[in-house]
Image 1 (tube, helix red, strand yellow):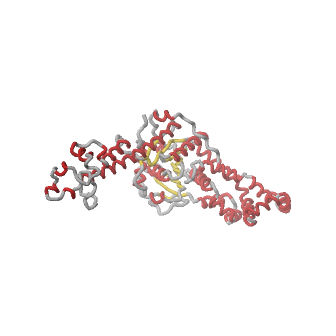
Image 2: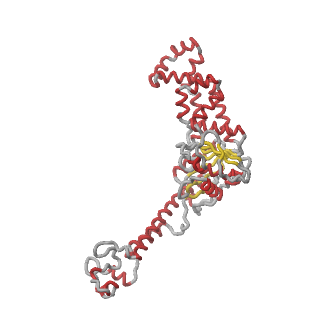
Image 3: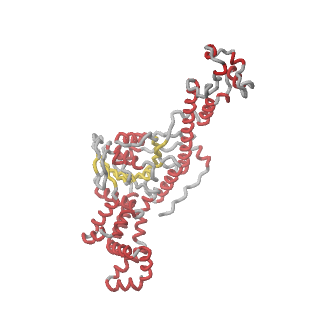
Length: 467
């Protein structure tokens, strides 16, 4: 994997004097007939699948024939689109408004099936059967590091070559790193060109007795070590696989190069999806820099799951101070009667109420209740130790204090998200951004996807701009 470039350093004061963030215009992007591929990329767990599905639905309902390719094993896309299951074949989504003439199809990458299709398409039947039945191939096609990303590129190339779709929306694999999607073709190519492959392939190329002599004499030491490490049978399976795949290796590299050039073409647009969190935006910054280095077209950043508040004029500090005042009224100025009662030296440290309270004539005393059995004005409990839950004023105070503390937590979260976003925009002021508010629940149907699409296209900032 190529080394990530370090983000350029900026001075902290710049973050507090940012120009307004450029707004990403989503509708012109997906409605433009020149846009043929939209790639949603980013680190895992930031909402790429939902974003890709929402964009596909929005484009289809605006008249384009769209296919959404997802590589998410959680199968949320199928559920949200009302499809029982997705597989390697595009399936039309029902319930889409097709009044503008558009269609929406969806499919889920079957990594092994895609690999099998490549073998079947580029090898004669006898050799294809030998490859598909090889134990090493079965392991490689199901779980080799980078295979999923590579097969996603293969499937994208297949879909584009058919020229059947106006727009292909790609949900990249849920990798640990967003860069894995771009690195996979080169990584697999390096594996196919590697020294180990050439060593294992040499006996088959030498052929017959010469090959056996070469293997026995020239490679006996190396194969002996590999046999001990891998096991004799596995080594034999690998050699058989490599010999059978030899004629196809060039094809893998050629198609990978072609798809890579397709991603650099003007008809492709990358959308980096991130949550307003430090790690996700750091990964987004690396990806933005990598796209620029590879001359790949970046449309902008989707800042997903952003929290907002309609009461952001009340700061966290003021909300916390107000909550503390309500929870302990003695720390603020009171009316003369209450302040005198609570601050009287005779009240604290004594079980007897002051004279003023005895002559105040509370309703309980007027009814004949002894003075020592009546709770004081600030007392939370009755004489038998139970809480005075029937005091409506104190109940309202406690509820209000709790709400103020919740508001303070929300404002602190907003401040963290704003600082994180501002650091990104300070590093990359050229990147257009659209912000999507965090929803209270998961998206599970077309209505929810339409809502996400509306938010994507609105271009309304959820976080306030730093002035």
